[in-house]
Length: 192
Ligand code: AMP
Image 1 (cartoon, rainbow, N blue to C red):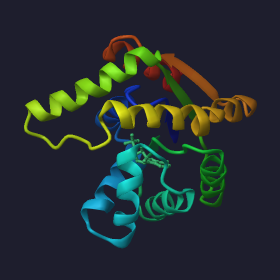
Image 2 (cartoon, protein in one colour):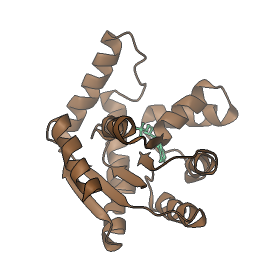
Image 3 (cartoon, rainbow, N blue to C red):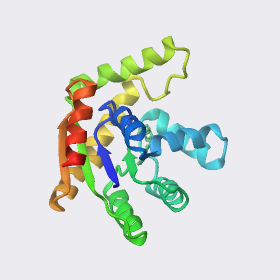
Image 4 (cartoon, rainbow, N blue to C red):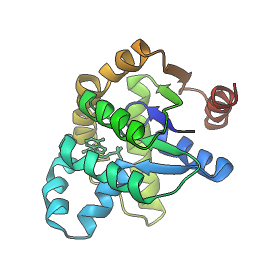
């Protein structure tokens, strides 16, 4: 079973993906995590993407599609959770092609709906919690970068709602609910 978790920054995609990894043995493919890893590795690609990411912009389709392609070709999993990918229509088309080439299907596209006003609070909170725990704070978890990320979401990513709706694949859950409730809503979709 392959699924996409769709939603703005701070919607809880990573948290819910982690639950699915723990409980269903699925593999989380977060392009954000892959890009953060690439930048610490000091590669040329890492350097290129660092500045874009910190400001809250989108990295090029070529780079993220390449990262996903590599994972799909090398990782064996009972199912993938796409977290933060696709983020553009071009990426959505590419994912469809990659899965088709592999004889695989896309089984669920689930959007976590969260009101904008709640998002900025979650992001600021995530940064504060990381700092308190002595963990690295994401350079893009600040209010300025967040605004840019949210704008990028509405401009580039939210069209995916219509894209998947037209294919009869779009589902959504109330991401404003407590974490466990969101988890149950997602489980209900996957087990339906
Ligand atoms: P995330 O961890 O999903 O919030 O991603 C953090 C940052 O990585 C984003 O703000 C973008 O700069 C970049 N990024 C992650 N995934 C993608 C993607 N699918 N397409 C373009 N940029 C991405």
